[in-house]
Amino acid sequence: MVHPDYQGRGIGTELMNRMIALLKDKRIFMISVIYEEHLKPFYNRFGFSSLLSGQMQTFESE
Image (cartoon, rainbow, N blue to C red; front, side):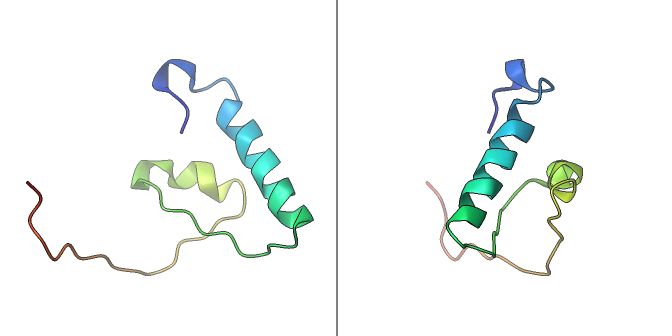
């Protein structure tokens, strides 16, 4: 995550490009991320697509 004070400066894009390149170099060809819905366009720019999934909390947080 990039601190809100520094967003919009290309930092997140640079981090993603570097991480994707590193993973490709290591022959890791499947990358999964969990993100908030409003960030979907950011991840779509890198080729991520949405998959159907679900999550359930089975305990009460204190």
